[in-house]
Image (cartoon, rainbow, N blue to C red; front, top):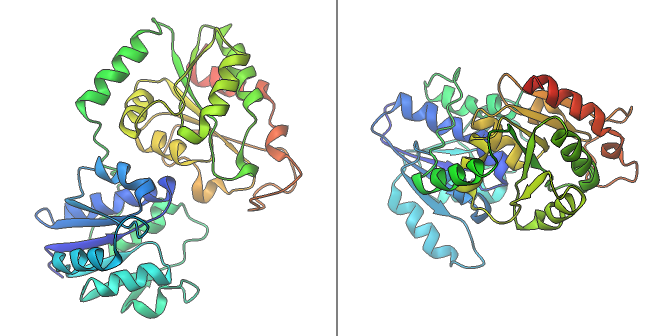
Length: 329
């Protein structure tokens, strides 16, 4: 089907939205002149804003913006097709209210938007990486879904900021530490990150802590425990600046989180720490990464809260070994 106006609906967290970005890239290759609009939540609007394949961004924020205004803006787009990659009843309603003739969604009737999609064609999202599952939307439109082009373009000002930050670290290799994550059960302790930073400093590796405002306490704790080994930037950089700093790092050590997926999308090697979630589906995408899972029998339990403390059982020495092997130090 020839298309010139396409609406992508994906509202959710940073990591989920990053997983979806290659769909815009694949659709752009299939329809070079198309206007690709993206309806996104406020927390993830920044990453869509630096994706070169997206023509226009609409932010779903009913607390600050009247719903009727957004609906009017959606209808003004006159999309021919909508890709509901959220799969909720709410997003199905929004896709339908846009007036899109073809409303593509997930095939599973368990998805809340199933009754509102007139083309529920994308198969189940289990047992494959989320990026590959979302690319099913692009393949349905006749696009080549074999290449994951995230299309992230870092602005010049952010690149200049990163150059100053990394330059101040001297000639030593720099590792980014990402202690943040949304689930308590996915969190490697700040003290473990600090121990790792201290151990890395003895082999000539500097560390920078990155994260959102919610990660400031962790950043402060890591920097306090390893004062001569860590530069704490958690909560002090924009998303674009975070991406620019990551790009200049030799590698990233991270929990399963949105910033971890940002690093992978930028092509930065990741040492990823996993416990309750499945790296097959939500691990760092692409080659060159290392996964370290908690050494417990209940790993991949999918529990957001649990007293077992599986992440605490990942020893810093094991992570240090992986980092040193990747850096050759």
